[in-house]
Length: 209
Image (cartoon, rainbow, N blue to C red; front, side, top):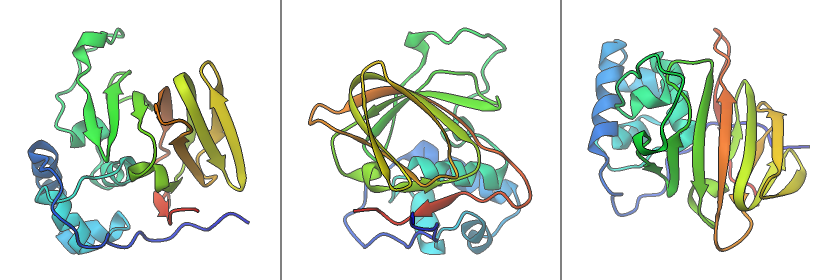
């Protein structure tokens, strides 16, 4: 059976990561605006207070699942956590207007407007390490389409190899992991929904081997 979701433990102590001043400032201000203590916010996001503190001071880089969890807790979007201003009501997203954001070694570009039920991203996945070791479990659906390279998608206990042009659409309550299958990495379009309800939780599973 697939591993059940669990609370992520604080990563081992290591040299401080490259500071992310905009993200860290946003995380701190959003928490205070929500009227939450560090301990309360960390508990709701399934993080340790020490880990959240390091994120707020720029000594840790948040992974995408952590960003999604904090966005849910603070009632905002990943774009809001990244300090992006609200987009004008324009249905067209120009390639030159989408500045890349590097989180945990992965590169993300907005491919959709903020504040929507669906969140669309263009993602560059490097080979090995970082978020490639994370198993994600959260409410909603995910759709991805491989633009270049080769991708390994694990859904529960089943592994799928996706080449350029292949797509996948799945329930994100199924434990899943995404990683590049070649040393050149992979690039994909990624769309997700995050269902919001009183008992909807975003969980980060332990790395699978």
